[in-house]
Length: 131
Image 1 (cartoon, rainbow, N blue to C red):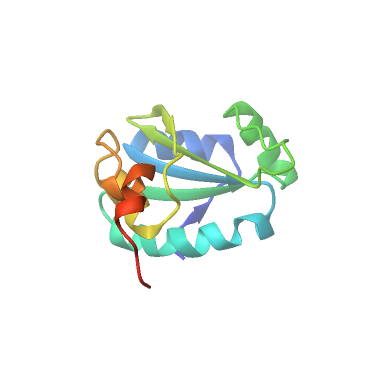
Image 2 (image 1 turned 135 degrees about the vertical axis):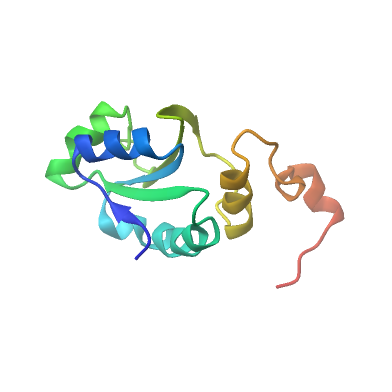
């Protein structure tokens, strides 16, 4: 598994200090994280050496403190996960683009760059994807 699970604030601090491009998945529970983790494992492979992805299970007693400290609020019922991006040791942005392999990879390769045009809601009308 390329995605490190972190529960100790010190570990996260160290990671953010030593890596300058980190995407953290915070989840309400392990089950809530499953789909994201599957996707993020493939993303982690694609951005190896460029970006780091880790996971914090806020449902875990030990990690709950960490989530509070990082100002992660998973209390709304419909909120199962939260993706936060950190750059150069500090919080950069909440990831709120499409949760797809392509979008997350593009984001991690260029966190300050514009979203993929495919994510522009207007673009979808002219372009039909066939899977």
